[in-house]
Length: 297
Image (tube, rainbow, N blue to C red):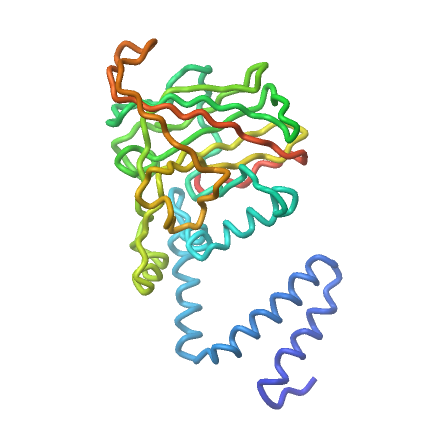
C-alpha cells in the first residue's frame, strides 16, 4: 500500500497486523495500533514530543537494577497496574477481590518462619504489630497448607533491599496456613512512604503536581495448588494518603483498620504499649498456581 498522507499510515499498519498468525497476538496488536495511532492523531503529537517520549522509555529501561524497577512504578502511577489487576480477578471484574498489586519489591526466596514468629530480623524502630490472617476459598472454606509470603516497608519507609542498615530479608517471611486456614506473626507497624522520585516517575509526578506517597500497607503473596496465586496489599485506612495513593492501588476490599491497644500485651512481656493488631481474611479464586517473575532479585 502506497502511503500519501498521514491518513494512510494506520490502514497500512493494520493490514500488516491482521496477518499475525497467533489469534491473541493479532487481537492485541490490532487494538494497540488503533489506540496508539488514535492517541497520536488526537493530541497531534509533535516530533520533539515523540523524541522526548522515546528518550523517557530508554531512561526507564536504564534505571532498572536488582533493587529497583522504574517501569513497574510507572505502570502503577498511570493506573495501569490497578486496571489490569481488577480486570483479571473477581470473576473478570464483576465482584470485589482481595487481589491487589505485586509492587516492585517482592523477593522470591524469603526465609520461612513458624506461625507466631517474628519477621523483624534487625533492630527496627516502630510499634509492635501482631498480624492474624485467614485464607479461604470463595465458599468460605479454609485453605489449608497454603504458602503465605509477607513483606512490608520499615517504619522509616524503606524496604530492606533499599536500606543497607537493615538485615537481609528484614520484614519478610514465609508462613504456612494451619487446619483452619490461619497464619499469624509479629512485626512492626509500617508507615506510608514516598516512591523514589529521582527517575522518570518523579518527573511525571512533579509535572502533574502530584505527591509521591503510598499509604501504609502489608504485602502478601499466597500460593496453593488449585488456586490462582493471590497477590494482595492491605491498606491502613488511617493513613493520611489513604484516599490519594500515587499507585491507585487502594480498594475497599483491601482496606482495614489497624487496631491500637494501649494496655500491655497479654503474651508478649516486652510490649507495654501502644501496639497494634491486624486481622484480615483473604479470599482465593480457583485457577492455576503460577508465581509471577520477581521484579527485583
